[in-house]
Image 1 (cartoon, one colour):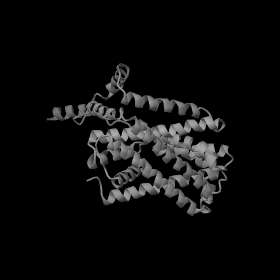
Image 2: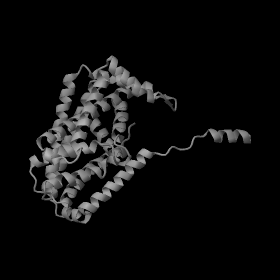
Image 3: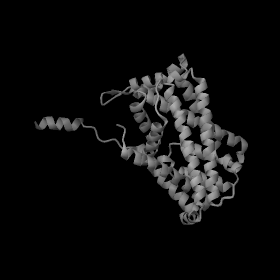
Image 4: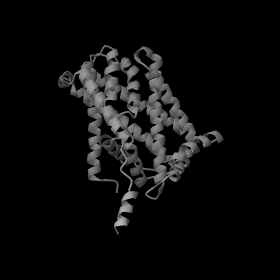
Length: 331
């Protein structure tokens, strides 16, 4: 009996240290501390006290409309999989996903929640994952398109290698989209090489098999170029409303920048939010606000106040998702 227990103890693997999570938390804390010390939290909060909250409320309305547009894009992706779901139901899942994105240490918490919820109300598990992945890719590509346009229009506003990173991210995402949608001998070889690392079993769950099934489901979008183009246009419209939001936040705190000025840097800020460097972009997005708006002559405390307003509105929307999840979960 003693030997059996000892043998079982020997085969028990030690808990794995989540180095990626630790790194993200460290970056979020360090960058946030740097931004607060650079811009001055006290001055930023003082700016917020005198903000025009009716203008902030108007920005919140635009943010809600942009969110509904994004959900409409997602619904189109689900419909392309031969399924359907009511728009209000998907709006609810989207808000619940935003809530989980704020409490989970991952940029993909919302995507997991959306895929899980959509599997229960419309598409099957594999098709729901495919719809969320395609929706995420199209949304990210639209942000990068706006970012590249901003680099071309106002290259002097982009410091360091940020413009180069935008190009790399754009090429990488478009390449990933082509790799997933259009099979060929070359792309199949690349896909097999990458997926070799997922050829494992977790709790009896064949990861490689499920990923292969999701990729095959995504192939249904290959012949729907019109759908992808329409979804891209909707994304550009939603991101355009997000630019208007930032302009309204700036107007609310007296930043003194024009809509054209905000439009030249907003795509860069949105693109920084796509980078999985910290938890939910905490710190990195605020730094982008301070640096880019500061280059336009906006005082750093005011730039930080704009970033705080944006995060407060998004947090408020996610709290609505938390309430909706409490009232009714996924069952």
